[in-house]
Image (cartoon, rainbow, N blue to C red; front, side, top):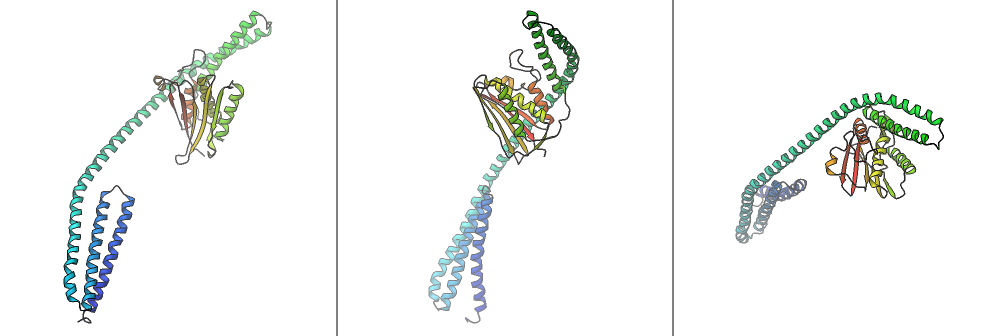
Length: 367
């Protein structure tokens, strides 16, 4: 009887061992999937079901193997005693699988509700982000239209005023040649010359503001340009009690920029910071390279008096200035705004009144 049943026994033994192996292979695979997506509740369910199946496989396989061993050793009574225990364990494993399934059915409903709420929240966030982006685009378009209109108007005025100012300045300097530098008339002419030069400076700002020509493409090392500007300001301005901190990212690659115009922007931002800190404070100029976004970020931060919240929205508007009369035309930031936009970049401002102000320039890498 043993010989005639040998093929069946072999198949039963191999099948029992294979069942245990496959059960634990399933546990291993589900554990990997659960690690990749730990928030998905279905992997938790399958994880515990696989454990129950593994328990069933061990119980059934061990029972079959033990059965054949006991029968071959002619311990049939012992097997008759053990068989109900093996069957009970198998029954418990099936009960466990059923219980997990019923529990999962309820958990799945909760999980679906959570997913639904999550999607609703994400949709609300996306909608809010789209609204913010739309408002930003509308503001930028409005700003661009405003700059274009004022630029055309300013260009016409500047050209009309520039020639008479040149004539006034020329005749004033001619008159000064024939006067004693110590005389009162000479001092009056000197005052005229000073104010004419101021007017010409304003006209030059108007012309710079009105020019919307495409920036030239020079190969520029941005850190070197910024350092040249900072060194110039240190040599020609009284900065005895003002600390300038440099924090340059040396990984910034060479860029195609209009060097003169970028110098103008950095000069204006740094001089504004110099004016904001007064006689004592700190100016921090930093650069950062974002390789993922292919962008360079320039920050000019000062510990000055800051900008009031009500003025932040119009800080880049033409002719807007918080400086005293005669100390600013209100065109510096507008011109800088136009230069950065023409380079495909952005410029932002963040300020805490009484604490600090930070201007951030973002330029794309065009290598």
